[in-house]
Length: 331
Image 1 (cartoon, rainbow, N blue to C red):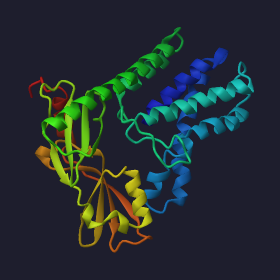
Image 2: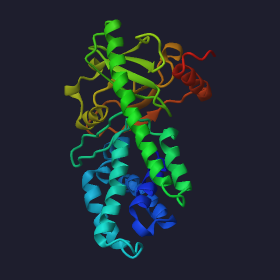
Image 3: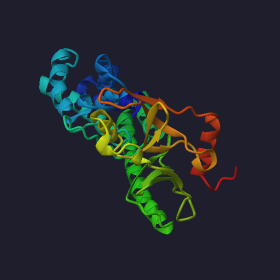
């Protein structure tokens, strides 16, 4: 999740666990501690060979269960004089839950975390967008009223209920997408799906077949059992997996093999399709969210550079996103 969401979550957890030391100090230190795992980028940067380095190692060790177990030892020792009501053991568990809730929340996003580091697999439940005001606002309101009994606790409960709602929506959408695949007779091998920006009502999907990826969006308010699909050729024949250098195979692992290829005279372009396409591809064509460029000829030392697509008229795209979310509202 975004830094603001992680700060208010850590501040809320820290406040609730601080015992008699509840107050601005517990809120500030809890929020500050909750942002520490995301500072791993500063430690990765000096060793960054190319953009793939950050993709592999960001949300790695500092977002793992191992970090939540080990880091509180140092943090509790360094801040043992800040909380008079907590023993070293109590302070250890205070930091443990602040760090653990940070990692668990990130697991619910599409980006995911290496929760079981050093294993490279990133746990990603694809249940909530990385910025969702409906998750963050209850926590913020609860903290603003921290002097009133129960406000912070209610904020945490409401945000957790919203997260559970997102998980429930994901389960519902699974059956909707499966039904749509069957109705349209798409020879699907597998599919992945995630909420669109800032909500849990409209979901986008990436469906893999033998030669194509299909994309579509699904609103919980759709009256039809299917949504029109947009197809993108995989073109994996341009560079078979067996011929890829190890670094490029690492990139493919990061994409969970949801990728397409495009070759130009000077470079190979790998499209990361885990996150779908931006906007309505049936109307505007495919706008790939993330692409990775490798200069040709490709070798083990080739650098992988990440590119974000430029999106013209962003406001229009979000306006159409709103009307797609609520199809019963006339434009």
